[in-house]
Structures are given as structure tokens and as C-alpha cells.
Image 1 (cartoon, rainbow, N blue to C red):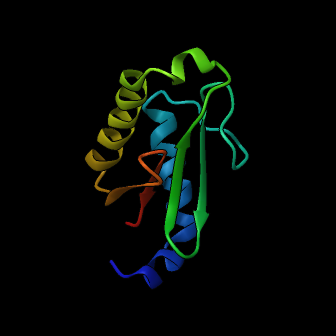
Image 2 (image 1 turned 90 degrees about the horizontal axis):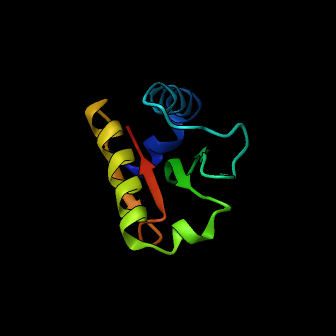
Length: 98
């Protein structure tokens, strides 16, 4: 998918991704920023729908295994739902373009 297509699918794709992640059991925050282990989900017209995971519990985030497990779970849910997913910013963001 071309980058220009990322802006075309924006709001509808964002709503779809939010719903799929919520139905999979993730906490999707209403704002852009993730908090207390929830997911931040927003549409970036230049890239697509962005998903980030954050937590106030720094003791969990410092473990690479936990970060990897959450990233793998998110990717698995989104790919199984038929989305094209890539990682950005050293794996701290997932970018969904379709």
C-alpha cells in the first residue's frame, strides 16, 4: 500500500483497529497516549494507524521479554484480522496501513 493510501483509510481503519484490539482483551485508551498498560491508537495521515503500548509500571517495561510478548500479541491479533502491520521506532510503534 502506498503512503498516500494511509491517509485515505484513516478514521475508519482507526475505529476498526480500536474495536479489534478491545475485543481481543486489550485496554485501548480514548486519547493518543497510552497509560497504565493501555494502548494508544491514532491515525497519522502520513503513515497509517499507530498503536503504542505504555505503562506507568516501569519495572515491567524494563524487561525485554515483556515488551516482546506484548508486541507479538498485538501483531498477532492485527495480522490475524487481516491487517498489514510493520514496526517503527525500534518496535515501540506498530503501524497499520490496511
